[in-house]
Amino acid sequence: MRKIELEIVALSHSITQTHSYAVVLGEVNGLRRLPIVIGGFEAQAIAVALEKMQPSRPLTHDLMKNFMNAFNIELHEVVISNLQEGIFYSKLICSSNDETIEIDSRTSDALALAVRFGCPIYTFENILNSAGILLDDPAGKKSAKPVTPTISEHERGAEDDLKAMNLEELTQLLQEVLEQEDYIRAIAIRDEINSRKSR
Image (cartoon, rainbow, N blue to C red; front, top):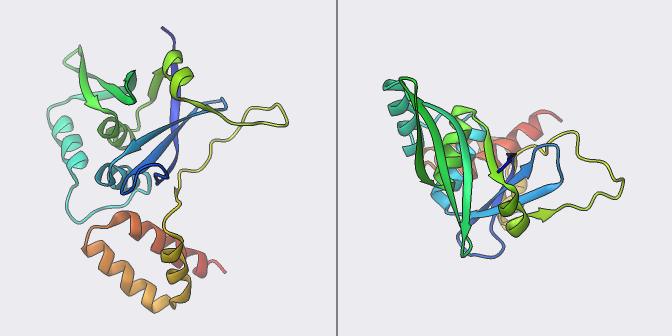
């Protein structure tokens, strides 16, 4: 089967499941999107890597990457290989000492590692056909440029609270949430600080 390359285009609160997130994968040079519901910890792990943040202590996926690097194991690609009863199954395609190994993985963990290693993410046509969404494109053109990965749909009240704070309060709040290791909230605060500094 031909593999189709995907990229992470969005990370947001899930509108279908409370306390869950959705990572949206987009077909490279295509219009199809594949939304996958993931947990909060995994969403945070993906967000930290996307935003190139440096946690004070390594997260589990950072530890896994360090472990793999220490033993000369390379992650070449992630393949979302199956979909059964709404659950996605993935494989890590790794190599060590000229031997290629496929390792079963939860899709959320596989994506968190893919972002850290900078490796491609693939799936198959049948998975995109059954779980994918086709974006409307009135001009009939394919997107030339991928959507910037974003943390969106965060509670509107929280966003309004950030806008009401001054720069000093935002900086202090950023320190507090970083100490609590709430990196998704830290990204929203950092973006608010950066938007004010660029005005």
